[in-house]
Image 1 (cartoon, rainbow, N blue to C red):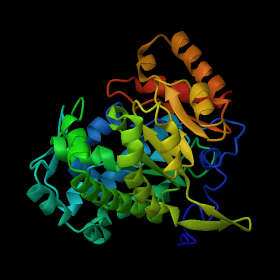
Image 2 (image 1 turned 60 degrees about the vertical axis):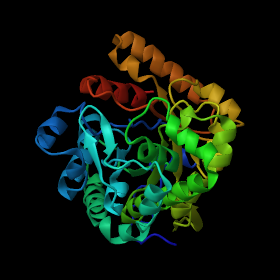
Image 3 (image 1 turned 90 degrees about the horizontal axis):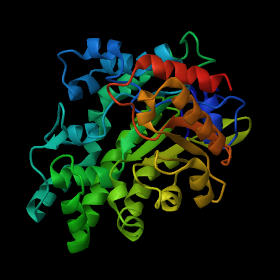
Length: 371
């Protein structure tokens, strides 16, 4: 499927941006930088705007979601906006009773623990998202229109769409909320492979439609998050999780556009937490760029990936609270190690902590752009 001619990639607005070039493996002269969770609680303007509004309500109010997405671009002059939403939004819109509880995270009213509960879940047709995602599509369109004209940026800023990988969604659905070890999810994987496959296929179709909708509406790249995959052994990930992640990415892999007489695919980033041993398989599910958390040095990650894969990462978020000289030294080390890959997008090795100093993030962007 070809993108509409007005899409930022097809129109040539973002195709040659620092970010998209790096995701293609074409290293720009200036390293692009953005931060996971850059739109959110670390910004005072975000806290003011969201006061009194529940998280999922904010995600599904197009004007508010768009404004929150734009805030860090205006403030920090990062090289990408990341769409403000949550990985459980498509679950909510598909009919799952889920809320985001402050201080806890996503909580399911009815965890999936029995075959009857699984039957009820998979009976929810993912196709309803084609209409239910209208607020998300509108928010993306509002955002993209304004990203063309952000003062202080080198040109139209690409929007990164995102979605949660099937394993992370399945873990939430089974555990009922956040979990340290995802014991129930891993137990189901081994005790009932058929049920596990049904659950993962449903999650892949739901989150894949969410990602596809963002791309078609104007996102210039897609990032798949597997926040909980680090709890898995390599064999379990390869056999029981990777196929569903590949199925998710099929929802964007057929989206192409023409530039300079060539057909290009929308770039895909795959990121997981604690996944240093899974990087090769995470790439093989269909990612163009692999995000690296703060535990694995970029040169080590690049070696594991054969030195042929663009990388994203991997500043330790804890360093944001260190003295500037310590943070600067760490950032320069990350940049140096990133030279081992064909291209590198500087990012955190996880999300921006809610109590991070916004001025430190701005200064960090200036440091990277000055190199």
